[in-house]
Length: 318
Image (cartoon, rainbow, N blue to C red; front, side, top):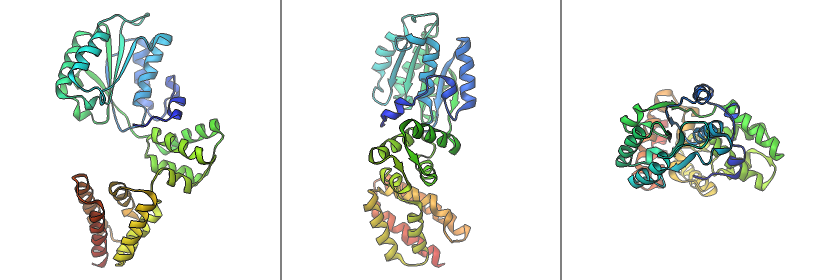
């Protein structure tokens, strides 16, 4: 997971600055204000504020002593049972510095913990309730065992809306003296899909090239094909010209350095703009899912993309 310099630079330090998760922030703020906080489980897609809100909680609870009272672990790096038995237990059994009666342990990507480690964590959460609170962060709460979920207040994060993404773009552009066109803003939102971390990474990459961000620069730095180019390839295939569509697809993949899974996801998003009947679009979506599954399972990407184009030709000709 790439963390850009800007991601750390623009990370909020209080609840008012956290964007896009208003309801969750209000509830968590009430916990912090009363210092009566249960264990927390944050689940949701990447780059929507789970880690940020956890660090804000630590800073608001402990003030200047937040680093001494907070243990931050990435469970995808340290996912074994020994981490829970040694690191977590050693930290949890000691008393907090300051007025708050408990310490804070933040486990990022906790859905990567092994089942054995999760069982050990379950006992640790029980035994050290008086001296420690846990914040678990994950992409998929279904991968966390039920006994841990039942011990936590579960909060589900959502991707940031276009309005919130535009707010972040404006803030970063103002601070870094960047000019971002309206088309570039729309492109940034389409690329990041509500992921604020990816947004800041792409903007930082673009700013290295030039301070005037336009659509061409945004798509090239994000290594994403323009939606109109993908749509054009599918429209050509729908009209029956398979060879031209195949050549354009290969040129597009080489130009942007796209993988098969990258291009099939863009195709899936652009299917609904094709000049076909709705029932045919539904058939293409079904085929799109099948092709993506075969790629993930290890099938040849270009062969699968050719088969998808061939299916579009057959569907368009019916």
